[in-house]
Length: 452
Image 1 (cartoon, helix red, strand yellow):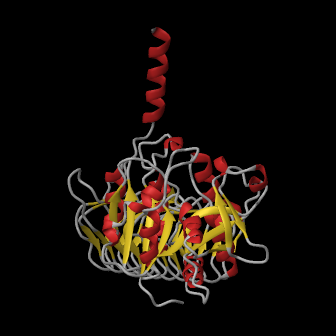
Image 2 (cartoon, one colour):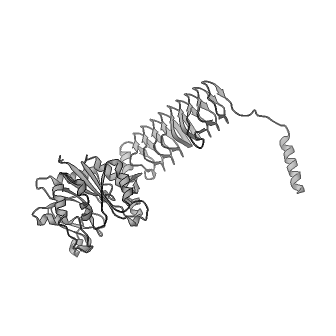
Image 3 (cartoon, one colour):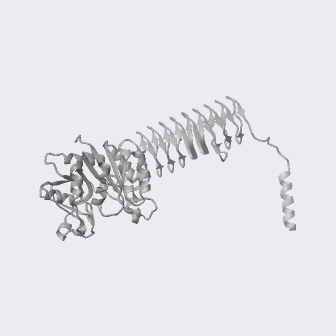
């Protein structure tokens, strides 16, 4: 691969009106991450010297999204075509001497390997002025066409669909819009691009023919249609999400996980899944989840921002919220919610409990219906449960409170004070029985009802 510096220009100025949304098109998520940030992250793997995002409509949304990632922005005030959009990045690349990748914010899944292939082709011995990324879709539709010299990857002509002849439209090799161009060539060529075409726009692909006219040439490399699929509508977003999920599921299984009903499992962009993990049907992973080897995630569970240890078990119907940490062999069962809490090795909360802002020691057992009352309407407080403690069913632990190691909390207790190790905490009224009271009550109510 070339060692020349790399910069990326990502076009994200379009209106995205077909999304029918107040959110900018490129910020709609795939696998829990805005599609633009998928692309920014991939570009970052190439260690670019600069990344410039060209913004337009709703620019403040895009600027806020990319700022934490070190990207620069350039403003395209008028939508005058892709060539005009790229030209807006010239000031941001002042002083840069290297190779420029031109990408699209609504084409989020192009891989780092494909980007490298584009850059490598730019530096082959024949030194093309530009490298175009082409593909052959099932339906070429209204894509621009790439016509190459027979038996070669050299481009003879590139033409937008609106301006193509019937013979040119019969060509199935299409232009994805992605390019690699040396910075010293890019803006010099863009300065010569005109707008004498059906749309009256400045087309980026015109730089290819301008290079040919100047005695240079351009080359095309090919990739799959899936990799350069763009998003212009909610339907296309859903379709691309489906393609991403299918690829991620296949990868999880290839790496040693079992997905019982694979097409019902939904991963986030950063989900980590170990070997011999079993994932049952209808499991959803939000961002920030790591599952260690041998863990089991049972059906209908939802995990986000959680860490699940080796051979631990979650669900069915469990919810792990951000900050949930299950150590080795810990178990969270049906209808249990865990938030910002750690369950130690072998600890169990088998059913119908809320464990929030808590530390649960190894081997502790949380009975059904237990709640850590962590919020007083203004502040959050912590509950600490020691190793081997037993919390009886239907107990409420009013934080801040601690239960010592080996202690037992009787069922139905409401704890407001700490419990020392190995003690029994019994917090409920003494049970009383009034013989005959229930019958006398029923008789009195029956008579009252008859008299009314």
